Each structure stands twice: as structure tokens, then as C-alpha cells.
Image 1: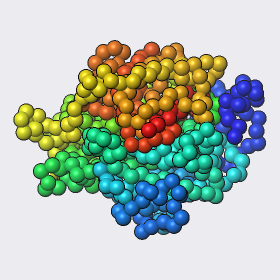
Image 2: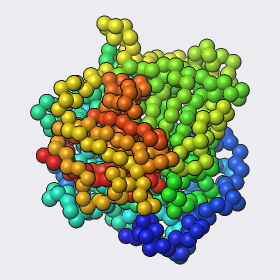
Image 3: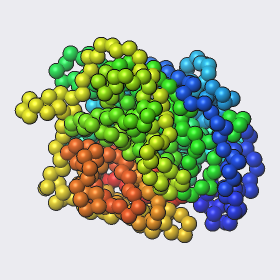
Image 4: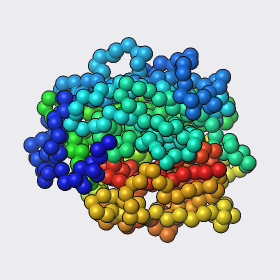
Length: 578
């Protein structure tokens, strides 16, 4: 595999940022660096509805399961198939169909117009018993035809999940690997691979037993192949998976006293935020040699440019994912006059908070971060409002970092408020002792666990034209740390790269944020309130995070989720051993 780093070392790149290789077959165009003419056409906003999705077709069984996955399959395992294909989709009414790579339900009938995100999983629940969970057979139906950007060998990562290393979307096949780790974990064109996600509670394999504290509520999956993740994700390989359990039941009318009864059904919206650049023929434009981080000039939500959504006056939950390459958002709810309206934060990518945080005026969302907010459009503050926008007020002209928050930003999604309807949902359950509303209360890390923790320090820096960790670019064959399973860890993560910002994602387990820059973290990432799987390090910042890697041994990775930084070597392997 010839990588971007190989080309840089060989000096094949020109000053334009382009490599002298054959042109592709119509599935994308390269952006000439510094070219002001290659911008997206001006598109009228809010002419396309937020698209609907169908449920992914469930299979009764699958033959010839990949060997590593067989021990995890049992009587209640659910089976699915996903095909990665080249297809043409509509991003906007006035754009011709755009060629993309997409995750497709191979058993679904064709729907016109074809959309980038076309399916969802039906009621995926956490806390599964042994022999439950889901198994997904990913088929790589891409071709090996030349193209301007993108790499057709795939490795889908179930981001935020707790799964065996062989199902984690490891970015490359390994020579130096544990004996029980498959020789092939990537998918060549024309081949398939099975990803088993047991969805069991963390700690099921440990002496102290499982805990329901470590449950996500927004998982997503995206391609994770070494050196080409950014290109493949930008082409379209990303989708989202809301997950539920016995308290977050996906049923706002659930009579169980434990049920949170958060908004559900049509009032539970998952919103994937990305940015694209198109030429006038509708083709995606990308600069694969942009090391800072690629920014598109056109916002898309769920694969549609600035859609609208007719919205009842009642509570809604919005599950937000920053699925882009390098853009960081500062999200507000606003009207045409620029007034903003509060939201109630109920979850991060680490799952439900211990309690709801009302009155949140804006949410910072770095790449791969997720947040769930509840908005009550029946609240008197929305009286007289006919239209509300989801707006990004973070200005950013370079992938290194944002320029700062502005008074008026880019409107991403238009909510058209309609009639008021009955609303049985709520936001939290009153604690029987304090009376305060709670969601998923959990204990902070204990002083004894902190005292017993092994210490590791990782510096995110830059050296010899690539992004590095502790001064070294990714070496996928050799781990930077060997971690004993179920051993308390404190990792010190520090950004010393200069002007770049880095959202750091650690695979397999959630982080408990103990300190940010030596001080108590803000509530939305503070231990005892929130858990994280991605943590943003602005220039010069550092955090101390607590981790405990339980249940699964094997090789995993951590990396920057500015995907161009990840592809330019800011990734490291760590091995969990028994």
C-alpha cells in the first residue's frame, strides 16, 4: 500500500498539493490548493426535507461466519448484512446525483431519490446476555478502478462500541499480532468480513462483574483503513446507531417506573453533521494532501444540504454527531433575528449523563463527538416562533483549528414549527431522596482506584512533516504501551503540536475525565456527570483521564479524530493483555 506519507517522503507531491497519478474514473475530483474557483455552486437552503430512513433488513442467520466471531454467536444473536457500494445520491434538489461510496442495505428495494444515509438499525439494545448482540457481515462491493481519492480496501469501525479487537475495525492487517488475532481484518474489494458486537455490559469477564454504567446512547460506524480514513469517510462511509436499554427504552409511553420516557419515535432525531464541496456537475471535490484537515464549503445534515423538518410543538430529542473530517461546531438554536434558545443536554458519546443539564445555550462538537439534547418546542419561549434553526456559530477557515465564535453563523437545519400535540415524554426521573432529576447516576472513580492506577503520558505533537504521538508517527506493528486487562489507568494527554487542535479518541473503553489543564473539568465532561470516548485538546491543553480496559484483550488504537491528522500518522497501537 502506497500511502500519503510515502509520497511525501519520495517527494512526488507538487506545490499544488497534487500527486502525478492517473485521473480517476469520475468518482471524485482533486482540489488544487489555493484555487478559489473550485467552490461549490450556490445552493438554495431548506428546499429538501430531512430524509427518512428504512430499517436495515434483519436476517435469520448467516452461513460460514468468520472464525473469530463464532464463539460469540448464540441463540439471541441478530444478523445483518451491509454492502459498501459506489452509487449516485441526491444531496440537494438542484444538484445532479453525486457519486459516492455508501453503506447500503443489499436486501432493500431501490428508493428514489437515493440518499447517502438510507437505513437505520431497529432497536439495538445494550446489556445483552451471552450469545446475544448483533453480527454484521460487511461486503466490500467497491471496484479497483482508478479514482482521484479514496482507497477501496475497508475496515469499518463500530465507534464507541465495546467489542473484541478483531471486530473493532483495526486499521491494517498485522504481522506482529497476538496468536488469536486474525491475519486478515481488512476487507479487499469482492470480499466480506463479519463484525460481532456482543453488546454486553462492560466487565462481564472480570471478577467484580459487569456494570450498566458504561452504556452509550449514540454509536456510529465509519471506515478506518490506515492512511485513507479521511478520504473514505468524506466519500460517504459513515452512519449512526442509536442504542437503548431497559431505562432508555425508545418508548416515551413506557409504563415501567424505571423508564426515562425520553422523546421517541418521530420525535427522536439523529442528526449527522458533515461538510462537503461539490463541482457544478455534482461531483465531490477533495484535497487528499491537505495535512491541516479538509473543510468543505457546504453543510449537510444526514447527507442532505441544509434540509428542513416540520416539527410539532412538543419535546424532541436530537442525537448529534460530528461526522466530518476537520470542522468543529458551536451549535445553537436560533431564529431569523439571531436570538438563541436553551437546550437540555442529556448525553455525550459516553452515554446518558448522571443528570440532565438544562439551560445550555450552545454545544461545542469536535470531530467524532456526540451529544444528545432535548428541546421542548411547546415551551412558552417558542411562542410566536414559526421557524427555528440549528446554527453553527464556530467560524473556521483552516483545518488546524477554528477562528472563533461569531454572532451569526451558518444555518444547518430549519425546523418549521407546526401544531401542538400531546406529549407523554419527560427529561429525567426525580431522585427519591433529593428530588433532583436523574438520568443514569453513576459513582465517580474512587480515590483507591486512582491511587492504584498505572500512569501513561502521551504527547500529541508534530515532527518532520507528520503528526506524531510522543515524537513518533504511527507504527502499526509495534504497540506504544502494553496494558494489563482490568488494571486502573490514568493517561495524561497533552497537545504540544503548536497551532493545531486535536480531538483524541481511545478505542474500546470510555474515559472518565479527572482534570483539564490541572483543574476540574466542565460539567459536560466531568467524572460523575459524564463519560467520553473523544476528548478535544485545544492548543497547549492537557487532560488526565481514567480508564480501565476490561473483557477484551488484543491490539487496539488511539488517535486524533481530525481525520487528516490521523491519516498523517497521529495514531498509536496499544495492546491489552491478560
